[in-house]
Image (cartoon, one colour):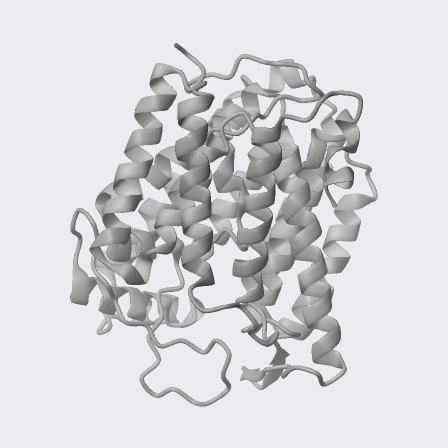
Length: 397
């Protein structure tokens, strides 16, 4: 597998810190990705804790032996680590934040293309295995009704989860190596989007994939030089998209009134998301490091749940469950990743972050490494073909 990952630099001695990170990332990704499918669980007891220990030891040893963070990066890494770890230790139900913090910080100087390639390889294989097994009857293909239409999970724990995986796989495939995208590819994305929608009835992923393909098509047609486009006001505005969507949804949650006909109509169109978010706000309110909220979703079961309660929106989930500080840090991460991508000339990645922000308005996968590998871009090496470029914000000493 790693010959495939390192084939672009086979004449150069591999960086074993990078290799080690990719191996650990692959192990964590297989473990977490497996849990989003109906494939039988074969993992040893406490294997998740083992992966946490593995990435923690890697980051500590790397920090001692090979410390390459700038002063600004060091401060931000400490902020990420402290905020995520406090939240994780405060409630062990959110212990994944422990692993995520070390994955983000440990990605320093690791090629983002190699990270994305590992993700693409593992996610695609596991999704294919789960899909085939569900079609052959080897695992359950969960079926649900939505507006008199049958929707299928296709080997995943829920139809929208399958669609979300395809959405992120498409983003990674387009962004990998910052390659020149063929004009046929946006149309292929549209075909994939409508095929996925046919079986899952997952509107959010359909809309995001179709509009993303339109953006990519427009970018291809414009053929604007990257040196100019990175300072374009439109690109700068795209970096603020996460704050825009987060602000809109938080406002809607706070303002929601179940006695108002207009709000009830909006809530119905959002599949009761506002009602559940308002309920979560009533349980927790806003506090610095969040508070555990017991959720009862549809995943892995078709049994009716009269007590259904789930926070689908990523922004309100982070704010209520992980707290104000983690929420602010995540917003900063998304903005920094978008700006770093722009200054590295990775315009497709800038678009990807914007559409992840849109997708997160309705879905809860923003901090889920089994879906979103772009969260690791904040310290990763975004340079293209070994050409080192100065990246604003985090590369200043």
